[in-house]
Image 1 (cartoon, rainbow, N blue to C red):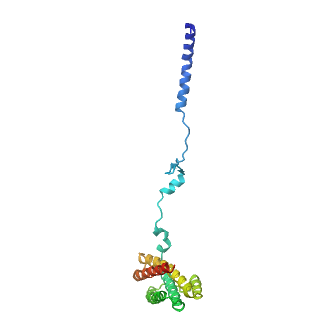
Image 2 (image 1 turned 45 degrees about the vertical axis):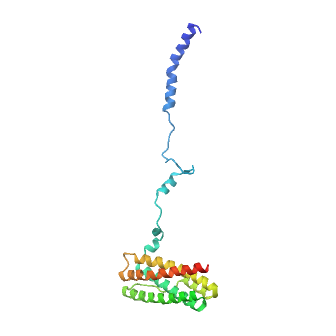
Image 3 (image 1 turned 90 degrees about the vertical axis):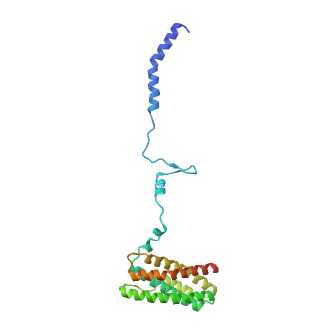
Length: 216
């Protein structure tokens, strides 16, 4: 290349240099715009979770006690009414068992149910009268339906349904009496009744589930 050509090329570079430098600086400083959206977090499997899902994961799970909120928020009137209804159901269904079942285990269990629940009901009636609690003793439609169903059964079919109802009924009874025994607002005599009866109900519950398992 001649000296003249080299001088022309050098001049062009000098003139164009600032423009190239400006373009390079603009490319380095220009960044893509971002939004306020919380970035999704990768999971162990490589997928991503949305911000809403991430927020749900930060929330504590409900405890078992919270799932039984209705039982925890109980009044003296509600406890007395439900306890009376449960006791009546256990007695009436067990009296049917003594009429319809030939199974010695079922009959022995039914005899205990009648004896224990009649004794508990007598105590409850006394406390209700002392506390002057308005307690309804009207028949529960669901219980009446169960009673009609059991009355139509005999033998193994009756035993199977009776065991199922005893297990289910005592699950409810134990939850109810446990809640009442721990309620600070419950009148002292009603609270003591719930606590003292709870142990017997838990024995009933355990035995009912054992019978149901054996007959399955």
